[in-house]
Image 1 (cartoon, rainbow, N blue to C red):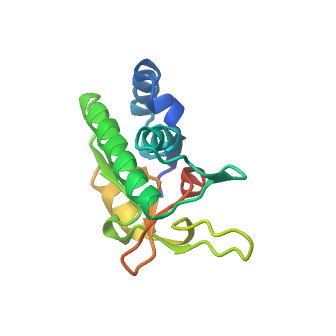
Image 2 (spheres, rainbow, N blue to C red):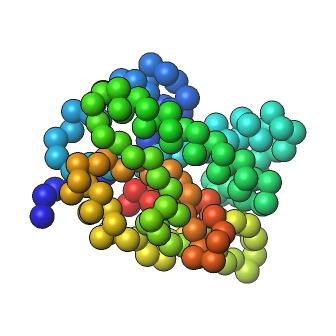
Image 3 (tube, rainbow, N blue to C red):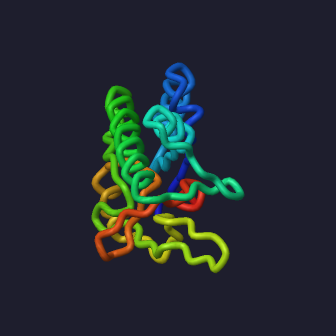
Length: 164
């Protein structure tokens, strides 16, 4: 099996055009099979504030209520397409996805007896067969930090966890 390189990028780089462009040029030059996972929590927080919703964090984890899952879904999806378009400009056949697409990443709602994290997901399984099929076609997956619970609910899932 050919080596797979998985790289994670955060919102601080995504939010700075020059830094993003420099990063994506380096990513494009990685030989072989590769995958990009991205977050964007700081950008989602900016938009929450613009909408008059103060982000709530506990131990670095976002509490994700109904309004917040809608906001992060919109922001992460938009960032995903921005990254895909830039990679296409670098001759990378990128495909923007979330964990809900192609049943790629199933999660379960985080259960904690003390803290209700809301719509936050912890990974249950990864559909490596689907990822491998895409990469065998020469496609570079670009995954945003959303997964699903296999019952129709999107879940906000840590991008570092997805990358690992």
